[in-house]
Image (tube, rainbow, N blue to C red; front, side):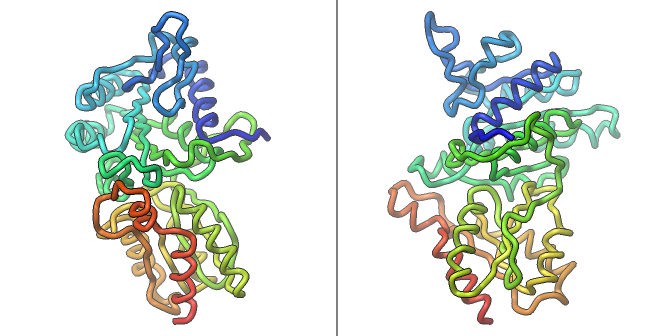
Length: 333
């Protein structure tokens, strides 16, 4: 076992996969990060995830113009013709610029070709509020992306899951969006040597409990776990489920936890309306209604854009105390 940050786990996974397969290319804005400057340090993009790739793989690491429409379209075509592109879209907010390429081209190519055209395309992108980046650089749109047929959407919360899900995405034959929370890049955790792939649709139990099930993704897993420790002082044992992938979702794990606890709280950073939380509650309503001891609840940010002011942003985001309060209310119902 090795202790790595999420940033370094992703970087290590990219290095090992590119060394093993010369069909893997990486492209995006500033991903070479100063490698072309004389005596310059290769930074590897704004968040440092692609550090060292340009020095080792050179022409397979492509800095692009500031045009998501162009480079996601190019990557889609490259995937259709035998390469395995890994595209970095600096902020998930910018996927709106290239939504036609994502929704109507990449996501539909295998279906429209009756499976004859594989599309091994991986889109890495950042998400999440908490660092004062404002309304256009802080969204978490994983629930919205999961509504697009043909896409796999993953949102890791640990270094091992980040590297493992990235490996599954790159080695697969369909388009995957990996949502990386920019507030978690420095998070450390143990990673198995060799960075084994993590299968899509298989969640993990982040904390065991018997009184209430909390389903959360990405950074909210850590806030939910913190809330569970607070609740334990009151004698409430919360089980925290991290689905790891938004689509496909591990319905079996969620329903198995619900059978034990009878109560459900879904905590999400995406939209208050028709987002991930609503999708999970729908799964429970269809498959676990008879297991419920109380109506399922959700905790999301308000139905507004992310505020820029730090204090307003902190109030906008669900925190551990908010989660604990919601669970206490649920446990008493």
